[in-house]
Length: 234
Image 1 (cartoon, one colour):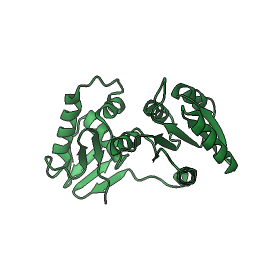
Image 2: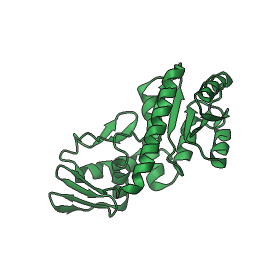
Image 3: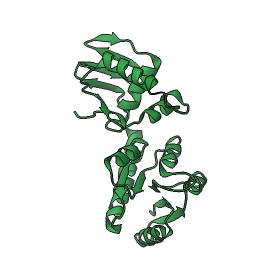
Image 4: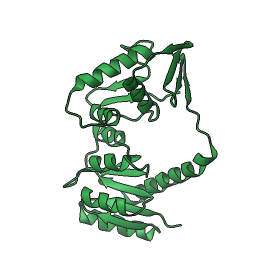
């Protein structure tokens, strides 16, 4: 079965090179040279994977990924000429599945594409056969994601609606980095206007309720200058 890939990249030479190689590998490839065109194509037809450049005119890759993630869990591989930890964290925090820095080898990017599609296909086959367990046990915590119930040492922990939604966001995305703007967008469903205090207060209160030592959190970690993540280590 041929998989269909959407390339969203403003460099025509990269599109030509990558599309040509992937076509020879048996993929069907569609391409767009900016974010707006890419979203038009994405909404028009189904794709098995998106390859998205971060820096593009009209609409950058981060905004493309954010928009796609509102309606789809399609695998996304991001590309960037900036090979830094911050770029990587932000890109994956928006919902990308993998990251590759330019310049890249065609063999490497093809291997990453194959792996992302394989993971997605296996998950899709397995999901209907399993009833996903929504109860999470973490040391002294028992968390029911469906009912927003949290117990600590068998005592119920009272969370506000926003605290419960923030906790669920992190628990469903362990090890994924979220910026304050992303948290605000997901939880408040509104544009972030830079009021860090709103996020800081909610994160602090949530830590006070679930962490053993809120000043040195085990689960809800701060990545200074970037945002927060849930430490998903067993």
